[in-house]
Image (cartoon, rainbow, N blue to C red; front, side, top):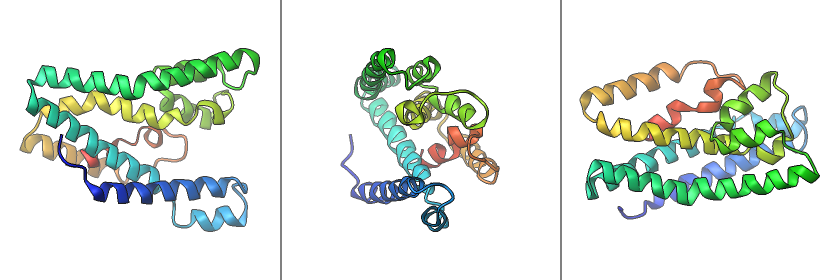
Length: 200
């Protein structure tokens, strides 16, 4: 693994600040003057910045592991680490939420199983539109983890397709996706593919 990139910590701090301010605005109500002024710079870009950083680090991790070992062993090591460090702790939290659900139902069963299946982003996009869902404070935060986890399956394929053609393909995908409208709750809003690809 290469040395830590300190600039990424600075970018993370910017992203965290933007996300915290955007959520702080919501505490006053979406129609409040505080929300209005904090929404002017579109602080939700902090989430996109997180995904750009994640895309970069995920692809870098996959590249380092496959260079240190064979492609198959490197990918297996990558998935083993992701499962151990991210998926299993997430499942432990979801299990605790499921047990709490028995006594105090806050999440729907669908909220819980989509979080465990790492497709919470698609589920909560539907919730924004017309689906019946539980309390968003319980499991909605798993949507960003789901988007990142789905990229885990794309990164090894991108590595196999390295070269000028792959670079052109990824660049074209970013250029095509970037101007597409993504209203709150749309599928592209939930997946954020261009942010992850830009990082890779």
